[in-house]
Length: 338
Image 1 (cartoon, rainbow, N blue to C red):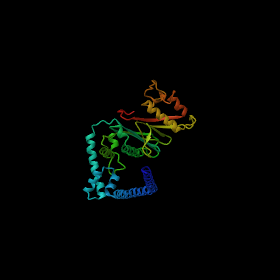
Image 2 (tube, rainbow, N blue to C red; image 1 turned 90 degrees about the horizontal axis):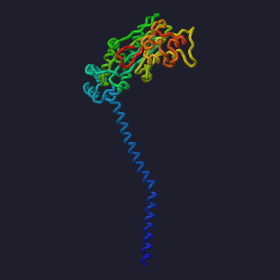
Image 3 (tube, rainbow, N blue to C red; image 1 turned 30 degrees about the horizontal axis):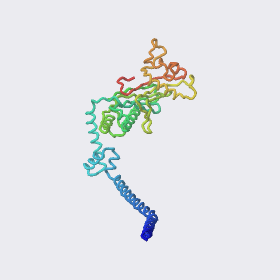
Image 4 (cartoon, rainbow, N blue to C red; image 1 turned 180 degrees about the vertical axis):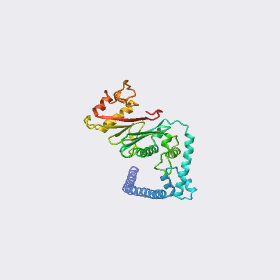
């Protein structure tokens, strides 16, 4: 009897457990759905308030000023506080302060070595410019702000090159410029300021000494073309400025009655190959076939062609019908101008 009673009680207990479990299992999807709905509502609510905050923040004078200038939050906040939250006045105040601080920083850092940097080249029509912009570290040389500075300098230099060729002139004109001469060119991004001011401004923002070392301008007459190569080869965003640690501009002409261009090549690609040779072999002069003493170390035409060492450059240009008129080669950190 006792055993029977125990069995009945156990059966009832299992039945209750199974009934409760079944009820829980049936209700679990509903509970899960409710929890998911609550979580989604919390996410939507937080997203709404976050987006509202960001939207309002992006419309604030502080956000606008920071976006326009790129200065830190604390500096932009100070500018607004000094000018009664007036965005226009704060912008002018920042420009004045930034220029003053830039010159102060430039004077403090002027003694630091600038062995890094980039060569920038820009060609347009019959004009070309090549400049060397130096900085202290390779890290800054890879900085976008430094690239945009180089872009403007090359463009300003090119605009001055266009004034070097008189209308109808038949002369090739090459003008080498030192640091002081380049620095006096007018900036295109900062009204009323020259390149020296622009560089000082960037020194204040970047925090390294920056030196505009040298430049060369080319203006060629009709019938003469320009070719250029930088190494390593790169460009600034979608701009036409090429930059690298090495750079070469070459003026040349092509006799259309003589010479044969190899299959798959053009006059332009062969001219760029000659520029690559100049970068790699470092000639300092063109040289002449009449030279009594051959100097392959320094004279271009007496060198073995870099891309085909079995052929002299003189033989190559004769086969192509190309005449090299002038060239300049720059290398970052070199004191002499090749």
